[in-house]
Structure formats: C-alpha cells, structure tokens
Amino acid sequence: MPPALPPDSLALALWYAAPIVAQVMAGQSLADGTLEQVPGDIRPSVQDIVYGTLRRHGEGDALLAPLLQNPPYPIIRALLFCALHRLATWTDAPHTVVNQAVEAAGQLAEGRYKGLVNGVLRNYLRQQESLKEALADHPAARLWHPAWWLEKLQASYPKQWESIVSADNTPPPMSLRVNLRKCRQADYLARLEAGGIAAQARGEAGIRLQRPVPVSQLPGFADGLASVQDLGAQRAAELLDPAPGSRVLDACAAPGGKTAHLLERADLELTALDIDPDRCRQIESNLARLGLAARVRCGDASAPRAWGREPAAFDAILADVPCSASGVVRRHPDAKWLRQPQDILRFAYAQRRILERLWTALQPGGKLLYASCSVFPEENGEQVAKFLNRTADARRVSEEQWLPGAEHDGFYYALLQKLA
Image (cartoon, rainbow, N blue to C red):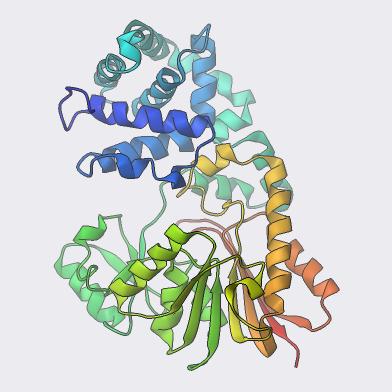
C-alpha cells in the first residue's frame, strides 16, 4: 500500500525506487518486472531515479562508505543511493532532496532510520568536495563500472575504452523503425514534426528522436506504424537480408523487434523461437500490433529437434545469442553490477552450443547471422573465429562491431555462409 505522500512528490518516487534498487543489490534483475508494479503516473520518475542510481552505483557506494559506520537496513542503504543520485542531478535544490529523502525514510522500516538518513545526507553535503576528491584513486567509483569490467574494456579497446565508458554512463538515445509496409519513412517524419517531435531519418527505415518521448505520444504507434528499436539493432535484418519466400529462423527472438523487421522487409516463412513462454507471448503481441504473422515457438535454440524441425530446414537463421549485454548497459544498468567475470565464460559456452546446433538447421548455401549486444571479444569475434576453425563448411561473409555511442548501442554481427 503506497504511503500518505503527495502523489507527484520526490518522496513518493524515492519510496518506490529504494526497494527496487535494494532488490538489484541483492541480485535481482530489473528484467524481472519490478518497475512494472509501479503505478503508471509516477513510473517515469521512479525509473529515472532507479536507472540513474544504478548507472552511478560505484560512485554512490564509495561516497557512502566513510559516512556510515555500520551498514543500515538494505532498503535504507538503497534509499541513500537514490538520494545521492538525485543530489547529483538536482544541484540547485539539495535541501529539498534531503527533506524528501527523510520523508521517504519515514515510510520505510517503520520510520526507524529517519534520523540516520537526515544525518548522513547533511554530512555528505558538508563534505562532498573532499569525498569526491577521494574518488580519484578508485576507477570503479570514478567511472561507474566494476573494476574487472574496466580492465576488460581497456584490454580489448585501448583507444576507445574511455568513449565506451562515457556512453555507458549516459541515458540511451531513442530511435524508431518505421513499418514500411504501412508508412513511408518521410511520411512518418512529417507526422512526428506535426506533433512537435524533433527527429532525423537514419538508414532505410530508422528515425533518431532528438529526445525520448513516451510511446503514447508517437503517432500511429498503436496502429503499427512504427516500433522503438535502437539503430544498431536495426542492422541485423539488413545484414541477413533473406530473399522473399525464404524459410527463416529467428532464434532467441524475444521481444520480437528483429523478427518484425525481417517481416517488414520481405514476405517470409518465418519461425520465431524463444525459450521463455512469457516472452513468446510478447513476440505475438508485437507482431499483432504491426499486422505481421510468424510461427512462434517456445523452445531451446541449442536443441533444434526439440522444437520440431528437421536438419537443414532453413535458408537463413538469425542467431541473436544470449550474452553479457555489455553493449547495452545504459539501457540495463543493473547488468554492470549483477554480472561477474565468470559469467562471460558461461555465456561463451552457451553461445558456442547454440551456434553449433543452429548450424545443423541451416541448408547448404544458406546464411546465418551471429548477433550479440556485447562488446566483449570472447562473446563476439573470438567466438566466431573458433567456430570457423572447427567448421569446415563455414565461411565468414562480413563482420561488424558496433560500439555504444551517441547514435546507437553496442552490437556485434558476423554473417556466415554454409558452403554448398
């Protein structure tokens, strides 16, 4: 039951945000739907606090350490993280932030920590310059990434790692994909302009918004005129580019953005596969909104026979493999703190298994696009190189590594062909 706090207050947003951040710190992913339980009218404010707090968690953790002799109740510690984030972004109203955080604390843990929250935040305001100076020798705190993550980026991208980190620490851009079966790109741009939404065309069907807006404000969204999809993710359908009438498999397809893009570009006999029944329903819902149809199956991409197809059944396969999500952490900031170094090896093993099994479902002469939203080479170029070394009938047609930046997130693509 929400507390008796003003419905549009920072205190109420902090009250909702603190337990979500605490759950992430305890190991729960944001993908589990905790934000969906927040009422719609205040959800944008809560999401802004949660995502911003998690992006800069390394900093918040280091700033709090000297201010707390004993770690408080987890939800109160999370509330302090949220308040520090808001103090960093509402620099002209620090005392308002403190007062609102104290109000939120009064509605958490039976109000036992109101005094602690007040004291810690006011001490922070008095000491913030010296506290921030102390972060200079702590890269994880200063750069908002775990130390092992930074080491991997520095080793893999000695010239670009700082720009990757900078992109990770900013809110993501918002891009659209126009459904060219229903609307021309130029016509949709005109509709956006008429609605006061500034945007620019990108590629064959992409549109980059100047600033994010709720999907409810997008013209014709409910009628399937456009979808929200990162410009980098739109590259997948363009690279695979199956011929009309092809038998196509989109493996690990949820939530269905790439499935829909393939179908918007050509008439295909397409199977969309995902292991999660709830996410399969999400694929069906997205296709229905766009007026598209595919054979949606729930099954394991690493076990083709289990989902009802004979070997060499497909002309083209999109292998959008599970990965660390290291290229999209600004959209999933919890991933930086939930992932551990050993997880990369675990993902690499799963990717190898999926790639090898899907290869048996591809007919000779067919194409397979290996795709990930990672920037770590173990999941990308190294994975593909090892596959090519042990697979005599495979050749690489093209390879692209997209690093996160102002226009798009980080993605990897390797287009492979099966020799006839």
